[in-house]
Each structure stands twice: as C-alpha cells, then as structure tokens.
Length: 232
Image (cartoon, rainbow, N blue to C red):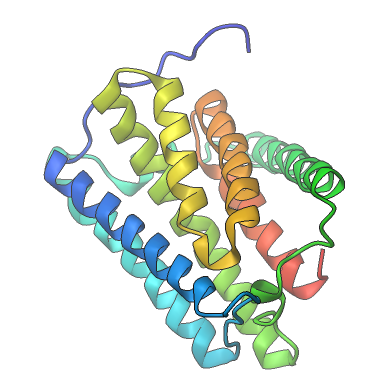
C-alpha cells in the first residue's frame, strides 16, 4: 500500500446520530474503567454463563440496530457498509484467505506485545468469563459471531466512514475508530486497551484496502471463538 486509499468521504448518517453512537461508546468505556477500578488494585472478573452470553448477544444486535436506524435516513444499507455481497465462490475463498492473513497479523501483534510487555496472555477479567461447559461453549460461539459482525459494522463500517466524512482523511478516521475501539474495552485494563487499539488499526487497514468488512468479520469472529474454545 503505497498511497492513501481513495475513501468515500460521504456522510452516511446525521452528525447527531454520530454523536449518539460516540457517546454510547464513551459511556461503555467509562463503565469498563470503573469496573476495573472497583477491583481495588486487582483485576475485576466478568461473570459467565449462557444467560450472560445471551445478554451480550442482545447488546451486539442493539448496536447493529442503532447503526441501521442512523444510516437508513441517507439511503445507506447495512450491506453497503459491509461491502456488498459475494458474487462468486472465488470472492468467498478470497475473503477467507484474507481473513486468515489478518488473523496471523493479529496473532503476531499479540505475541510481540506479550514479549515486550512481559504479560502472560489474556487478563483475568477475560479468562474468568470464558466458557467451561458445552452449553456455554455453544453460546460463546454465537456471541463471538455476533460480536464479529456487530463490532466490524459499528467501528470499521459506520464510525470509520463517518469519521472520514467528518475529517476528510481516511487515516485520521482509521486512527479515531481504533482509539475508540480500544477504550471501549476498558473493562480489560489499560494494557489490553492499548493492544486492542493496535488490533483495531489492522482491522481498519484491511477494511480500507479490501473495501469490505467481510475479511474482518471472519477474522474477528474466529479470534473470539478461538480465545474461548481453544484458549488461543
């Protein structure tokens, strides 16, 4: 990638709607940081279980609905945000291959971060909520898929394009969505927030280059599934 991509600096929802979405993300971030601080110097632990996972799935669906309500006023569809539909089996295989490459990049970032930081992997706040039983694993997979779809639509589909329209810069937009994505994971602690911000940059770059969220959705969902099912 030798030059800045030609992004569509088209406003896809009202600025009021953008402000609402950003405010919600900031509120989530603040709640997460408060959750961490309530641990009293240790690491707060999130609950787990099918009902907990179901509530999180409903939250992800609510985010998709929020974005849909905003973009439909400009004639934009969720399919537009995702990057259209697959036209052939070649398209499917290409996006799966790109998702695999992106996943390797994410693993590389995590390994380098762990080596530099000296950490041992996922924070306790995350490992405590990972599934243990068959019903939990089933719901975890459903949650991972919903998170992959919803968070890519919200951050790389909606926010990245809205920030590009607001600033006139694809690169500033990429950085803004990555920072917001990172801080929205405040419940995992400051160290994880910084690492997740870097992961969001990788997701954003793939979305810009491919002009589609499909590889990011696949990689995002698989990363979350693997973290819970295989502890990878």
